[in-house]
Amino acid sequence: MIGIILNDNAYEQDIRELLMAFFPGRSFVHEMLPGLELCLIGNVEEDHQWFRMQVVFWGEYSHLVWGNTPAEQRELDHFDEPIAVDYENRTDTKNKIKRRLYVILKALTGRSLPWGSLTGIRPAKIALTLLEDGMSREEIHIHMQEKYFTSAEKARLCVEIAGRERELLSLLPKAKKAEGYSLYVGIPFCPTTCLYCSFTSYPIEKWTKRVGEYLSALFQEFDYVAMRMGRHPSAVYVGGGTPTSLTAEQLKQLMDRLTCTFDCGGAVEFTVEAGRPDSITREKLAVLKSYGVTRISINPQTMNQKTLDLIGRRHTVEDVKDRFCMAREMGFENINMDLIVGLPQEDAEDVKKTMDAVKALAPDSLTVHSLAIKRAARLNIMREVYKDYKITGTSEIIDMTARYAREMGLEPYYLYRQKNMAGNFENVGYASPGKACIYNILIMEEQQTIVACGAGSASKRVYPDGRIERCENVKDVALYIEKIDEMIERKRKLLTDF
Ligand code: SF4
Image (cartoon, rainbow, N blue to C red; front, side, top):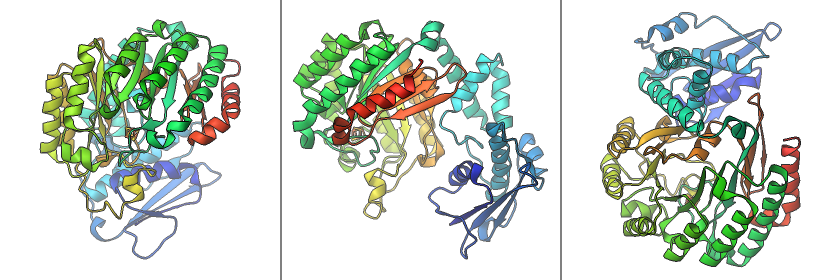
């Protein structure tokens, strides 16, 4: 148990996230209790100008470990000095506090984190912004190590990805990026619910009777968005859930309305997540093909049958291979596969087996996720039941997936991190040249306004000065159907004056 005692909560979340990265799985309290292993006390002093931080520790951390980089050592040399608070520049103050806390925690534990003091989900956005500001790649590489104490490897990965993102974004005319938007459509149904799922997803069998109503509500959103934003989204992404959980007839209805309302053919890409192999049929793939879908995802997550059974995905490894080959044979030239590292009971050997099987299929892109156990996931809700499951995510395994991706001719092109990620790692998207998903970059790096339709989806407006505003649709499908007018009203408020 770890204590955080602050007289001003402005930076509580930043402090807690960094402590969580050093001490995964610990609970936090806001008072000095017996049994704490460590307590951070922080006070904003003297007319809110200074933040003074003290870390009290007991037991195994009661020794200091040295071996810091010169930049870390410079920070540590001033560890008992207060930090200047600039309320006008929250990000700067937050970074100063996290730098200081990072070097103290590193000295106490003897551990360093691959991402250093960075806890945000978009590290590549920092590199991309600096690149656009004119900094050279070499300067950014050094900057990330000195300012955030990231490892040289992660800094290099960020710089490489930012460079590639920049090239890919240049495929969108500047005016279109700034004044246009991309469209997300959420279909919140799946064949079954995976153990680790925290998305808006409902088992399709239980909702069969209401799918028609869901689509009707969704089409009302389409009409409003087309009227407000125009018919020409830059990129179109249909996700969920699993859109191919719909019947072929329902899928046809969806594609028909979507392509009539929007010029999907004029978009740089038109993606549909076929996702679960157990939802894919030849008929459904034919529907997607006939409406001009350019990119699909067939996601095994793992190619080990015992794990698939364990995580509640009712399909076989053979199903993955079969549907992949079917899609190829039907002419899909851009197929992505999603994998997860750190699944329960999987070790390096299991991941290697998955990578060998995926390599044999040769997808055009690959997204490697590190397992993140979110609050809403069954794996978390029923943690007592699953407490004996072993979850292994190591940097060696992550490095192995990166090596395989390169061997397959795939280059990293986007990256993001999540809270509660196994081992504090990252998710990386790899693609062969010309096959990257631009929508993924637009949304991850917050480069363009995304208008999202469907239950549980979130729209994000990106202003020219970089400011971001969001509005969310309710997650509950029945409520979404019932409150569709309110969902449209939320969009109207967000998109006024666009
Ligand atoms: S396929 Fe994806 S959205 Fe559907 S239950 Fe599994 S994790 Fe959730």
